[in-house]
Length: 90
Length: 203
Image 1 (spheres, chains in turn cyan, red):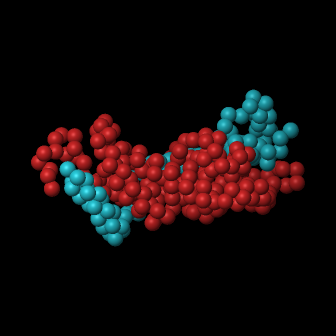
Image 2 (image 1 turned 30 degrees about the vertical axis):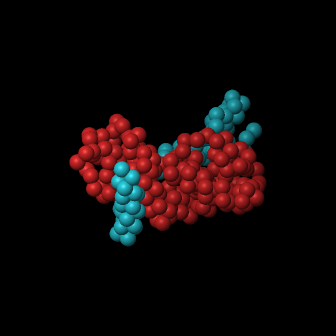
């Protein structure tokens, strides 16, 4: 019988690979009788879903960070150099 | 500057305007994944340069912003890989093989929860989202950088464990342990920072 600690490890692995039938079955049996691990599964599901959103979708982060003026100038100069070199070649 | 002889497809290729229009967006995107403003600025610069060099390949089929974000994403993945490769393999192995007291203290001797996980509500489905995302962001900052990078790489690259391990030159077992520790660390941090009741919603 899996302990709760074992289950947390398996649930993490389930985010990364397909578990074997045996593993899935033993987790199911444990979850049937363990509300704490059922909550854990929900937490991990939320963690993965929100992480993916945080890392890829700008609209929901509410972040207000912007490029500083100095960074903006530096990047613009660097781009200008590259564009000039390109134009010079033609 | 000769811009009169530029026909249709190249008229839109203006790196300065890209910087103007999408610079902040690209910066925020990179900042969220790298959590370092200097590196994030470098990524924006590299992305715009790469975009300029490959502008001929841009078919205009996807929106400009989407196109630039795609380039940026690859740059960030390369950057995370590079950072992780610079960590000595022995250090990574030690990080995954050493006991994790943060995890151990959650369970009793028989491996049962000492404090059961709390109910988090459904922050991924509701408007509470934003507060949860902010808490997660803070938790990522508190996590050990190597763990945060492996976790980020895994979640943004969509690569399998095997691919990530192969890139880092560590075993699949170690990789799995790092991701497990990252998730457990984030979960525990969120237990402390996040409470669904703080927004007054119930479920």
